[in-house]
Image 1: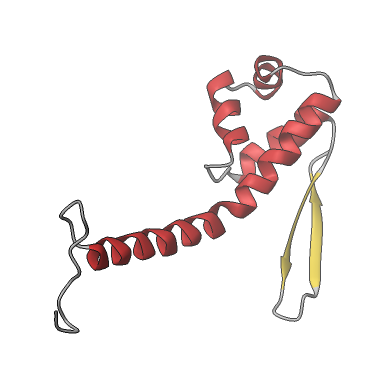
Image 2 (image 1 turned 180 degrees about the vertical axis):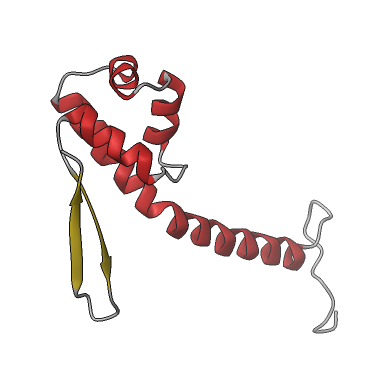
Length: 115
């Protein structure tokens, strides 16, 4: 077998292309995980507050004027909420949201929004 030939596994498929596909998927997976990380973190905060205040998803949805499925999507950490949604969350919890910017040195400038 030459260096450029693919090795044939006992089940008859080539392993190198499969390894390349897995590596590509892994890179894509990592990229997607990095993209979703802030939304998953926000989702954990929302869930923790909802539990702290003893609210169901339906009750939180009622307070926000939205649907229970919208709360479920938000708590999945797979979707980016709008600033309007964040403001409504703050109001529903009786809290203010804080928005801001962080530069490359880590310096932050924050502003509270709402209540």
